[in-house]
Image 1 (spheres, rainbow, N blue to C red):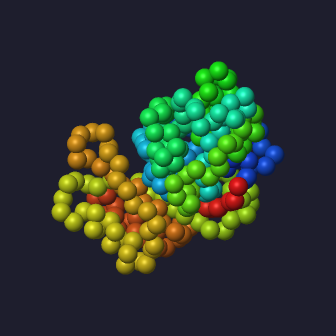
Image 2 (tube, rainbow, N blue to C red):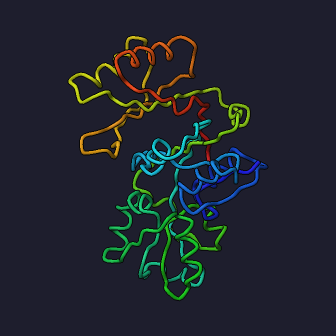
Image 3 (cartoon, one colour):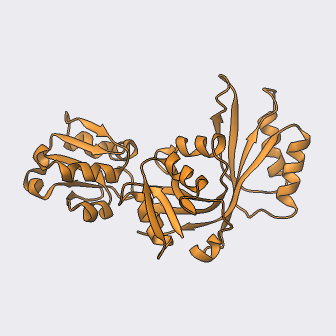
Length: 283
């Protein structure tokens, strides 16, 4: 069985995949949509993509592509701590404080803002598709004396020297990754986690007063705990939104179907994006 992930090699996504899917074939893809399309096209059986970071919030391309382009169920969730390190080509290890450019994913650059502001004031920062891509670029350009912000796996994969570790601004920095598959994947057995979550996409019937309150009430009086709610544009006009809601329980036979039936009767459109085991792993 093959797992597609956001590449190139040594991204945080691959780090999450390797912690859970031991012994599986791994296939890196250049973008998040490419990962999802690979599942749809049967190139891989499942894909792992980032969906939320504790500091930077939701990964919008994941949410939008999942809700508006492909129809793939979420079958699992992996959460890992994110540790950002500054690394350079080994030839430039002794002069790392003189680097002329810093490469990384835009989220990583934002997560290390304080360090970069204090250490490299005036040095240009360039956003690339992933932290691993940044590491690869630095390794391929030793004469540039540039630095990358990436993880320890990237330093090992591309032969870079970590000159400053744990440069992220906040200690609690985690990223959630969703596992997507059209197959009947038993992620509980794979991950060993019995903690479940369920994710909904809810579209309001119209811009009417109290509509969101009705959504929340359907869950609240049943004592169903919501762990997240956010709005996303429907891309049909300004002011048109749908909501993504996470709840901390497995899809059951009574409470969740009852909430869905109540919302359906009120004119809401409810789509279950997945009911899945959630696991947190250390790296």
